[in-house]
Length: 85
Image (cartoon, rainbow, N blue to C red; front, side, top):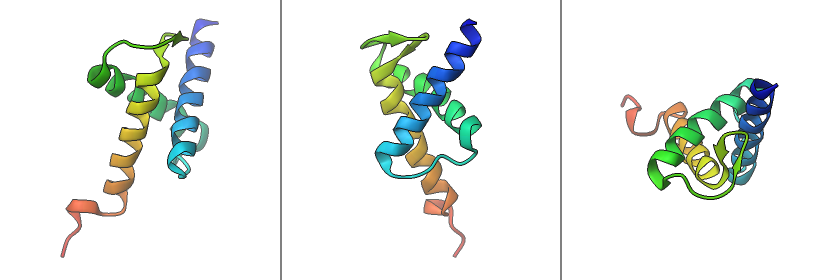
């Protein structure tokens, strides 16, 4: 049951971060879950363990980290700094 809860919270974090930046997370539900997990890791590394904890995720750092991760992903996906000239 804990695994299901973690997947749901990770998916909600990914969905919320995608909604906040106005872009759909590629991969649907799986993409949202992955964005939530990566965002949780990145946000906790950058901001530390702060804020409320739901399903093992520190919510505020997880959302901030997921937004940063998605912005980096979208920049790389469209070419960004790595585009061939």
